[in-house]
Amino acid sequence: MRIYTRTGDDGTTGLFGGTRLSKDDLRIEAYGTVDELNTFIGRLIEHESMKTHRVFFREIQSQLFLLGSHLATIDPKMKEKLPKFASDNVQDFENWIDAADEQTPDLKNFLLPGGHPAVADAHVARAVCRRAERRCVSLAREQKIDPELIKYLNRLSDLLFTAARLLSHITKTEEIAWKAR
Image (tube, rainbow, N blue to C red):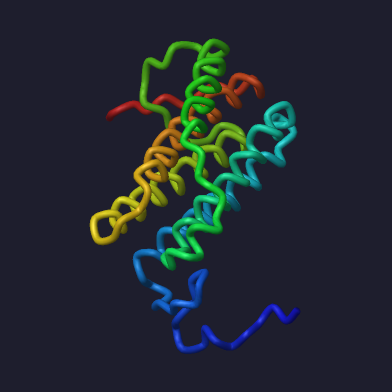
């Protein structure tokens, strides 16, 4: 199979089902940003300090791929063929956050990203997740999308913030408190 098709040379891309949209369409922006998030999570979990959490985060990557496929599908017949997006993931996120919070000191300040490469990568993933959420909110204002997708991204950004804090603890790196001048 060839990787290039030349069909996007005119600035359009195809959705599942064949509909073509401009590459800067809100829908394309939404699932493209989810793809970018997935890539940053892939980078994050390659840190040695993430080894005990890799299986959990690989499942998140798989769910993000599914989330993106839901965003990339508007054809009702094609949508029926997609696996359902499971909303119970949000509860799994909350459970993980609660368990991680027990291992970290109480949060008393706003934090600056950084201190350790794994912590910085977790914050990059969190920021990209927030952007993916904003893109989905913009899309939802114009077209119908499953509200569970937005809820998922919102809670995932909380999880990624908590992951950054946990990684500071695991790597014995002091968190960088923001101080107003």
